[in-house]
Amino acid sequence: MVPMREKPMCKKSPETIEAERQKTRSLYMAIGQFMFEFSQLEFIIRHALGAALDLNETGANAPFDIVTSPYDFITLCNVTKAIFLRTIGCEEQDRKEIEDILNACMKLNNEERVPIAHGTWFIDESGLGARHVPRTKLDVTIKYSRISDIDAAAQKAATLRSRLIKFLCGPIPPRDL
Image 1 (cartoon, rainbow, N blue to C red):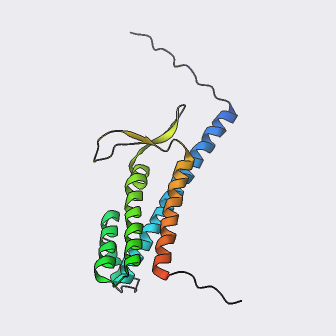
Image 2: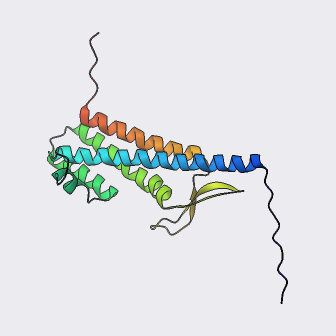
Image 3: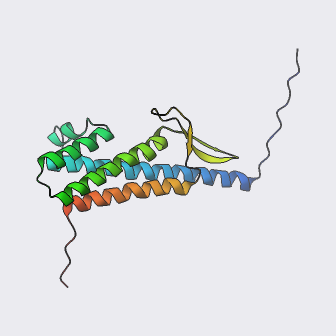
């Protein structure tokens, strides 16, 4: 019988353990914030499609959910863009704006959401990040070595949502005081 070697005990101070826990919580918070902002962006795109098709009614068996929910994000963006560009009488400037917004949404999905949602996350002595293999390249990429990178992606989603809301509602008129 071969004797078992004892594994060396890794002794970490309580301060080190707490710092690691805090870093992990910060990572979870950043990922959650991004996913929240992205889901809000996705809903506003669904709303834009529903409004363009005059599907304002919500609730059980409402046409809005039946029509807008089956699409994955890229298809949702493409269908919404097609509706605005082909069927709604938008002026050229509006056509460019909606196309720019939805193209930026698709870019955000491909470059940020997919690695955040489908990457394999790690935190270790070397740092943190998400290991992701894009289906189109089959090469490993490591993203998000800083939590601030995830925060920046969340901010992009929030900014795109604001741009889309402004596009749909128009500029806020000045208030008479």
